[in-house]
Image 1 (cartoon, one colour):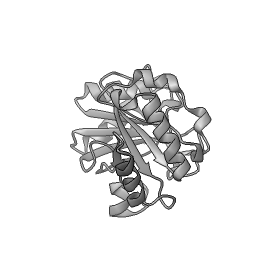
Image 2 (cartoon, one colour):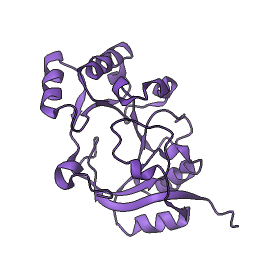
Image 3 (cartoon, rainbow, N blue to C red):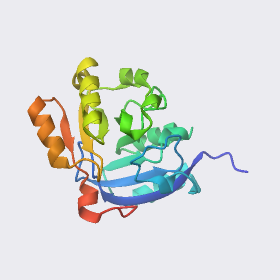
Length: 216
């Protein structure tokens, strides 16, 4: 068996970034297989299992065909595979602006500092808030992003407490996103305005454009 580094990949595709500060940018996506969490609102459960083994050189060759500036490594949970750290560094070495989407339950200390970390802090309604690794907050920089997926008013109140008590807006950009079918984005916008929160409302562009189609 070859000792060339590789990863189990669910899909590699070319689309517009639907979330975060680079929303709307043409982006190459690398979706890794596997995740140790089971959030109640997860929309990528198809990435929990399966996938195919690819060597890092193959992954980079696929992405190069998209002729993009931005690359997003997502999942599943990318950090659940040990080789993901090398992939992130290889992408940075190739000149891409690289973002990592991570659930925040696995240590991010080893992530290449050139990578933009887009990390969740799981709310109670996700069913996985006890998995939050708060030590990860110490590894976030001003260019990184911290996301709360809000499922109900109690989630919102919980998230507000975290934002204010932990001084999160001084660490990085804070994103509030409405869980699809559970909170109306307009209601979440009204709550943010009412409470004058130093956070950014996030609406998933890709779902507006293409619904729940995977790989878009």
